[in-house]
Image (cartoon, rainbow, N blue to C red; front, side):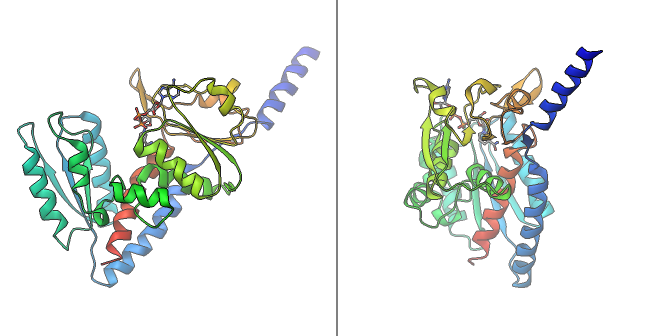
Length: 296
Ligand code: NAD
């Protein structure tokens, strides 16, 4: 009997001390309301934002992402033009199309869904998009603005992460932020955004020695690695905020780079997968399209 009471007290203690899974769906709903107002104002000025999407691969995940973007465009009454190619497409064909879209004043944003067919030079094609229409924020001009801390189009996943941190009231200034992963589209970009917000930032990657030395000191830990449940509670700091960017498919299920259940008793906040960073990414894209359209 005494033992059972002891176990119940311990369980209660653990539940009291649990961190919180961030309600990203709630955050997205709030952002959707603000976005609707912005688009209504554009419509009042007779502006209907338009996004051009180019798909040149047979990648299944890409088709799913394009479908999600399409549904969100419909929800926000954003016009969408889709250009879908098979493996016979040439680089010149794509460059000609981008040229046409760059010069079409009714097109606000151009999105090239990656990866492209292997024979196409991704960098060359992405860099051909006019920086002011690069709603993915991958163009060197937009990346340069990010590094310089100047205004530009910010890539969607990092932008979504900052919105999450701001919404939960996390003061980024002066915090130790550790980013695991150094890809341009996630790791490097979020590291610069955090730096621009006065965090002390460390980027870790596959060649980092003694990773836990950094993660154990991280007030904010952003994980973009692509390894299922890579981060467990033993290498994170008590009371930290952990942002899980990973999207991994394991036995037909989507899991993140963080073992959410395991870290929950140690963190202050953690994002879940699914239902976390991913749902802010698509919304950030629509926000970028609306922002570009508002400059017409
Ligand atoms: P990437 O493969 O380009 O980069 C992975 C990074 O992880 C590399 O920089 C590598 O150095 C690092 N890494 C690999 N093994 C490591 C290790 N053992 N220790 C430390 N670092 C290690 O991937 P990416 O495009 O940045 O994506 C990362 C993850 O985020 C993937 O799961 C991807 O699906 C996901 N993702 C999610 C969203 C979203 O909207 N939620 C957007 C983009 C990517």
